[in-house]
Amino acid sequence: MEILDDLKFSHPIVELIIDYRKYQKIKSTYIDVYKRICNESGNIIHTSFNQSLTNTGRISSSDPNLQNIPTRDDIAKSLREIFISKFEGGLLASADYNQIELRLLADMSQEEKLIEIYNQGLDIHTATACEIFGVAPNEVTQKMRREAKAVNFGVIYGISDYGLSQNIKISRKNAGEFIKSYFIKYPKVKSFADNNIAFAKKNGFIKTKFGRIRHIPELSSSNFNVRAFGERVAMNMPLQGTASDIIKFSMLKVERLLDEYKMKSQLILQIHDELVIDVYPGEKDKVEQILHEAMENWVHLSVPLPITLNFGKNLAECK
Image (cartoon, rainbow, N blue to C red; front, side, top):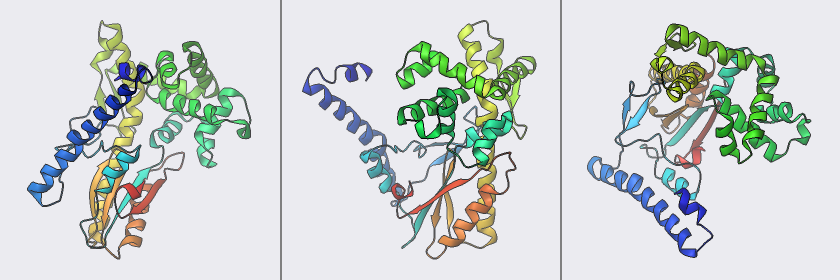
């Protein structure tokens, strides 16, 4: 695909080939599969959720995978429009944790600047751009914010200067300077990452905030690349793993409250940091109350952990 992208402007047929491949993949991966399942089950798609297949502890979805429905373009919107409430006159509700891993980074590293940013309700990417580029908030351009966003999320995954340079199309030297500047401005993030790696090397495992363990045998490998992967896991797993724990606890709490209030609305889908509820007519306000109560108010962090809540007649309208 990269080769075709490089050739895109060399001949009109290349773009047609790219489009054909895109639509063919959409058809075979989603439409054909959904049609087959609906024909067998009466227009209701059931997925299988797997609790122990991912190393991070996240629930995965298969047969079909409903966690990888595209989101970014008109084709994706059309796909998401086919998912509707099974109730006549019902709605779908989407409750999505807002930047959960970055908020956990602020809490678990106890980096005062990050904590202050979130407690003041500021935009984390603009604030980081101010730190990295040494400018005032009103001087931050869209390009600066986009690059700061890439650094914010890249640091969580132990991104290298090369990786960052490829993501935002800058030189490797500049990418290295961005990462270096980030750690200078947020020193406790660097300490948090280094301490996680040191702990994992000593003990052979790393833990989430709730104490769940992931063993990292890669850290004792004689292969440099394998060891480097293990170090990235040690940096990221406490954050991604804790986010996984939180969404699972929240699912249980949402389901319990729906039962306690004898609601007809149902929790039907989990997509990473997002829960989807099939809302029975007349229960919208109560579902909204339950989602805020069950997802926001039980986790005690140094920063707020809000959800973004949207309702719609289909899944596309929930974004």
